[in-house]
Length: 379
Image (cartoon, rainbow, N blue to C red; front, side):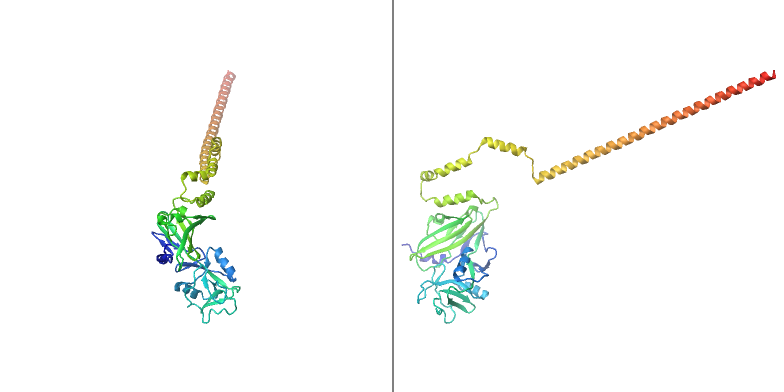
């Protein structure tokens, strides 16, 4: 049996991080020290309060340290904490919700625990200390969870269990959950040791994002778990959140370590055939799709804007040409009218001169006749 006493100090840590990775709490949660807290606004019994926290992927507050108890003093209300009596007899056996035992009794109110209203198997915190009460009572509660860690791709990230224990560990493994699929990832721990508490990512990738859970089993059979959310800033590509990712996680959980390539191919033959069939390209259909796409109207906003601008430019050019033609036509009409008017005026002047000439000619003839008649009359 391996001795893991020396790993106790390591298991009390929360996160190890490097480079620019940071710890963060989800929206609606407040960070105090090494944990994130959220107050349940409703009054519930112990069981329903515990379920409320579990639905938030969290747990009831378990104030084990002076730092955590300082958070209680800031809240200053009566509320459930994650401490119960598992013995259910006159001999009290106080155990935290994570499976660890209560080590210190200096947080109890004076005279508590008294099991006065037997059975008093649950615990509430109040401004003056803790008190044991029936679990059917109605109180509010505070949920707690570890902060998530945000890291950039290619950073080195180390996740460790936040589990306190007194006995030797007989089993420890990590799982990662994503899109309702859980995969065992212990084989990726540094050194390949499935019982090593730390889970190390030398160069973390966006595919490593997810909810990590550390599962610990002690020599007495006690099972402890610890959860960590890992978020990756993947700026160079868009993370896949699709059916392919879920299938990848599913088959990742099915693969048994140390299988040969031939054994894996044989086991996955049916799925590989399905994938080949799905990925087969219908060239006729592809050509038809390409023709439809190339001949289809371009509905992009930029194309629509460019089309409108081009149409407006053409309209302006055509309008200018039409206006220029109209001006030329008007000028031509005016010049034509002026020409014909001047021609008519010239003809009228000629007619007038001709008439005047004829009149003068007739007058001359009359004068000659009168002159001749006078001469004849004298003779």
